[in-house]
Length: 446
Image 1: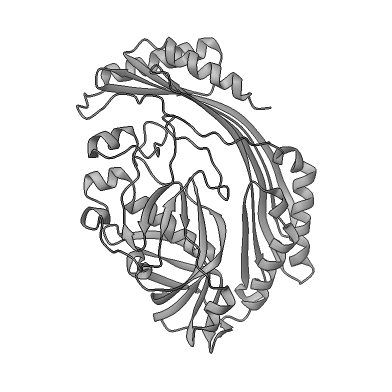
Image 2 (image 1 turned 90 degrees about the vertical axis):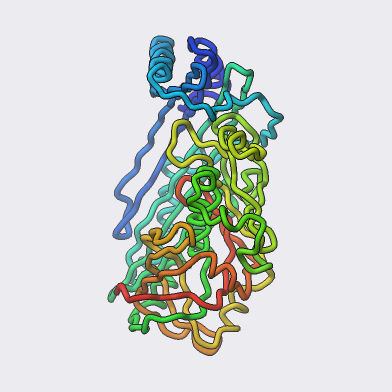
């Protein structure tokens, strides 16, 4: 069992106040994670991990030092506090350091935690079996995971910040594979077990795999594309990482430096970061115990601003939007709960409006080519189809793309009315499908 919310809250407060520094902050995270993995149409791994971690940030003047441990007994906490002070004593001064933040009103949603009991080993096995059955019955092979993460977070500092919350989440993935490189993908992320339909997830991936059999070549070039939500989530994830963190903005490595308050996307495009949305997951405060706010990133196509933590809010003279990551980190504050405003088109309507184009299920191995223009390169995967005369016609081999996300968002022809919560690098994106006028495919990848 993981430690209780009240227990880690007590430890965080005790650790912050026992640290012999000018001020101090303590973050305690306790979690239990359970995962069932399957491949070759059978379960081959079933693991559960319980862990607790304490991180202490000590402040001496404008010097800060951080130490951490995953032992929470009194002796280990005392050693961690002493190590944090030692680290601060040897750290360089930072004249921009504004001090640890003061308390701010928090909105803590009440959540009943039931996923762990619903998806114990037997529950995860049943879900995996339902997913596998959809591939097995069609002569396909399925691989994937069903996992549950239940965790509690407590943050305290010597300025009376005292924030704590517990939550859980359910994740599932499936890759259905057939002969000749045929493959289809499906995923689920959320807290509402009632919306997790394993058989439907497995069927969706298997159908994509069946349809992608016998993929042919497609000449690289610029095509109209319909991107499924998983593919859109990939580009939103990179857009948030490259463009909307205050550290990149302050260092001049974000496109926002030259675009703040100007049109960077079609007027139909609005993108927010909103940890409070009932459709997403996560905690409602950041790793300094400050409230996460619904923060506009692009509104009506206009770039609004970066997300901040207390350090960059003071440095840039902007509000603290509550996006601090655990200290220390090389990224600065980042948006971890991105959502794109839905449109009014169905997926069939978007495909039906395309005379000749490409449908992309998801991207794979995406990398950055030019951060200032948010140019990404990567590959399509697990269901890429030619669209001809308003319908998916033939499957095509995977393609490499090299594309500016900003140019693509300036060429949005339609936005899907349904959104899917997709996991990203450390966060989640609530993404619709998109119809984009021009998308550059620069090679074939087989």
